[in-house]
Amino acid sequence: MSQNRRDFLKNLAAIGGLSMVNVSLLAKNFENKKMNSISRNSKMKLSWMPYDLQLKHTFTISNFSRTITPVVLTQLEYDGLTGYGEASLPPYLGESQASVIAFLEKVDLSGFNDPMNMEEILTYVDTIAENNTAAKASVDIALHDLVGKIIGKPWYQLWGLNKNDVPPTTFTIGIDTDDVVKQKVQEVKGQFKILKVKLGGREDKRMIEAIRAVTDLPLTVDANQGWKDRLQALDMIYWLKDKGVVMVEQPFPKYKLDEIARLTEESPLPVFADESVQRLHDVERMKGVFSGINIKLMKCTGMREAWKMKNLAQALGMKVMIGCMTETSCAISAAVQLSPGMDFADLDGALLIQNDPFDGAKLIDGKMISSDLPGIGIKKR
Ligand code: MG
Image (cartoon, rainbow, N blue to C red):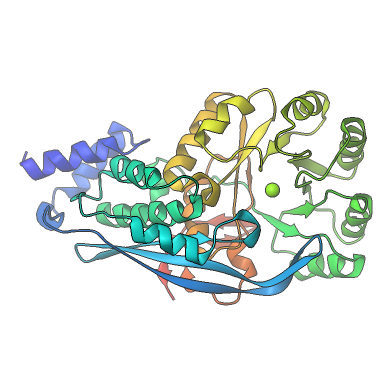
């Protein structure tokens, strides 16, 4: 065994979640390929570009509307290959194109010769500054795409997952007038098997009734921390269950964990954490508080930590869901790699924009399914 091949296998085994079976299979596939294609002398080159996503519909939360979502698209070049990444920056989360670019300007990869050393590289990126989770995700996703392309496999395969074993994705319906709500549901008729409804106020029952007037599809509900009282919330959950709702997301403010734990215990529907859980270190204390967690690449720094969160939550006996922001097919396809085996998927982000620069995971029979391309499974349009 040549030194190069030994190094390669060692690095490959170091990738979290890769079984030795997969490693030996990959090694076999590699027999006939030139090992020196992984040059030890190449350097990784990170570049970025701010980009505004044009939304198909005006997006309204409370009394704030917007028609664009700013993102930063990243590229990580190495040895003739390019990995693509993305930071999505909805304004309410505190990062901006300027803050992402300021962060990326600090990323110095000159000390790393080998993209396969993902753990070292991404640990370094995480220590550059606190927070900046979307900026960090833009490097993480690009590195995963690059490494998948070096190996020649999509990540769902490297993780040993079946790309078709995914839950149907929800399509999100925002708070709006009855007519708009009904029209939105009619527009996507036949495309989705489950819908997600934004609630959290006095108009919750009206919203549900409006949707029920036009569809029998199962619903999930996202209260976005908007409910106040535990007994009222419990009444509402029983009512929602009768209306065909199958799950409730973030009923109370994120820090009210005792209230949420009591509600979860009494709730006839699973209760999921979104705002209450950001990163890996949050997962363990959610056990006994929520039934499950909503993992999003933009809040947890990317695929590497999302994969760890999924495995930890499932090991703790919790359910898992994968969510998104408004994103291009880049970040969505990255999230899709993780979605096999999840309980819920909310990956409609790229379906809401008009100017997606990438082609990747596709909506097939209500599910977001990865392509067979290596890495995160995308190509430029
Ligand atoms: Mg949510």
